[in-house]
Image (cartoon, rainbow, N blue to C red; front, side, top):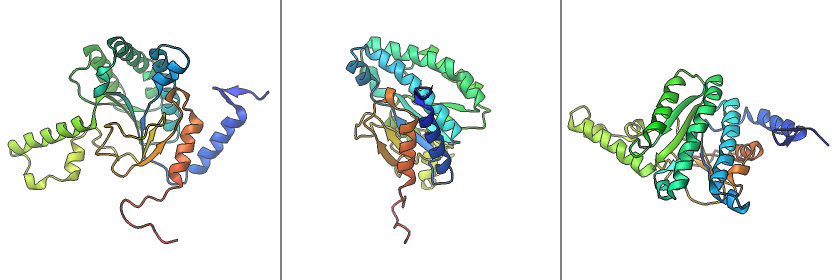
Length: 261
C-alpha cells in the first residue's frame, strides 16, 4: 500500500504539488473568498450533533489557510458566521463561539509563522465581548505580517456592510470633510471592511447551494464563481486545486469582449 500523508497517498500529494507548480505561472486569483457550507449536513448524515460538523470544518479551515499561504495568495476571506446565523438554536451558537475562540487561539502560531495578517469583518455589535477581545488581540499580534491577509467574516452581512460604509461617508459629508460630488466607487470600497484589499477574483461555495447568501455583494461584482457539491468538512487540497484550474481556464473580460485568438 502507498504511504499516506494527511489523509492522501504520497502519489496524490505529489500530483497536487505538480499541479500547483504548473499553475504558478498562470492566471491565478489574488484574493480568494469562500462560503464554507455543509458542516451541519456532514454531521447529520453521520448521525452526529451539528457541532461536530463545525469541529470537522475547522480542520478544513486549517488546510485551506495553509495551502493558500503557501501558494502566495494576497488575501483569503472566509464566511464564518453571518448576521442571520444568530437565529440558530442558542446552544449551537454558543458552541460556535467557543469553537471560534479555540480555533483562533490554536492557529495564532500558524499565522505568525507564515506572516499571515488576521482581519475581522462584520459588525462588532452583538458579538460576545470575550470573542471580540481575542479577535482584536489576534489582529494586533499579526499586524506586521508580510504575507496573506486572512479575513474571517463574523456577524457579517454584505448589505449591512454597505449601509455602514454609506453612513461613514454621510458623516464625512455632514462634517464638510467630503464633497458629495466626489463620492465614487473607490470611496465606497475604501469604507468597507475589505478596504485596502483587491476584490475577490474567485468565490468558492461548497455543498452545492447556488446562491451568494449576502456575502461580499459589492466586492464580488466580477468574481468568478465555483460551486462544488463537496461538503466543507470533506473539502480538501485536491478540491481547492480543482477550483484553481477551473479559474485559470476562464477568460475574464470584465464586461468587455474576449481578446481575439
